[in-house]
Length: 107
Image (tube, rainbow, N blue to C red; front, side, top):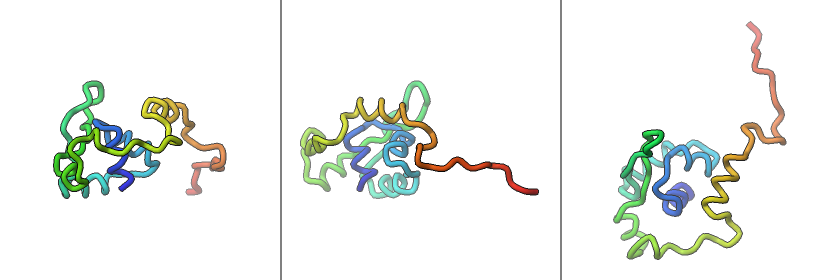
């Protein structure tokens, strides 16, 4: 449901962006959502060529919505999409609370 929500509120959105927002690999979930007809790759990002995910009319039907405008507003404590994008871009690859390890392995 979280992956579907990210796509619904951020569409059209690249799979990599959904993974970044969720913090996990979403490939399996995306395949399932496509197979169930809830989302589809409907566009391509002009700069990267990545497929952009969007919800389908079946998604709206299953949720009893006439249009995406009928989606409930995102909770007020959640950042707006632009703020979230800026925050994700500013994040370090390795969080401060994760101990860095030596990648060398004995032969």
